[in-house]
Image 1: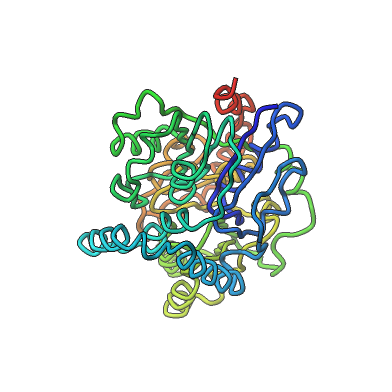
Image 2: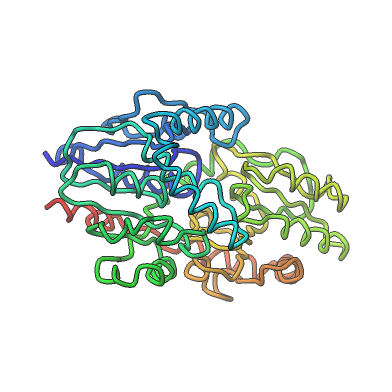
Length: 400
């Protein structure tokens, strides 16, 4: 039996983690022993792991990394890791050099800065694997490169590498040492290759796996909106982070309200930008128009009930949320950015808009005013085949 190790940074409720769970379900436990190591040892999605997957973490916390409790636990974990094995002392030159570079670029990203230290101080394993795969950028990739013994090593890229703030100095050229690199979309691949052009021959597309039938079934379960609103419902699903920049959507809602459109906008998700978003909502007087209900276990009834799904973000890899909304026949507006461009056929199953309040407002208003176009977009989206289980063979062929 072949032995596979997969490493991921956290196992919270997000797109890459959802895609990983679906990938794991398509690995035959009769042929492969699958071990999973969660670098930060945290995340609520752990309860969805297939029973044949071996979780290697000695101590695991199932709280969300975005909850108050989860954030406190995460901070403690970071401090413990920095102090273990003299990590902070050994990593001091690297950390200082990277911090100086970030300050020079006027873009300090603490998560990017600490990933290598988290990998260096993490739990180690003596087991030798036939294949080790880093399912996310940053810590997982560094850990697999430096601290795992395996015949073959692979890495997955889920984001626009340049936009996300990675670079070769931060990575210490770790991807050069990988046997295979899987990018989730063409644009993600090309962005990555601008940083690592010598990896072109070993970098290929690996589309996220999605259980469309399960999504449709869960959409029919109890749940969804409960506020008895009789106007248009606009929905967005995503973490409240800088990458998503939902303040632009809040400002677009102000324009919608001023134009007389009777609508409410809901964002299902959590993140460090909640306070900032809530403050902007209050400043614009949108407390009864723009809502942040938080993350929900099952967002699909909301998608099924929404009049319009909007995914306006700064950059993406390949949005699982857009694929889920398409599966449920939502009319979709998405920002014209990396990742989104590969998922929407302009004017056929959705609209790509400018990432500005005015650009979002114009597209939303036009689509809310045209019921037939919304229905047409929804019908075109619903018939898309968005997953191919044969993708998993691209990974498993590495251990043939």
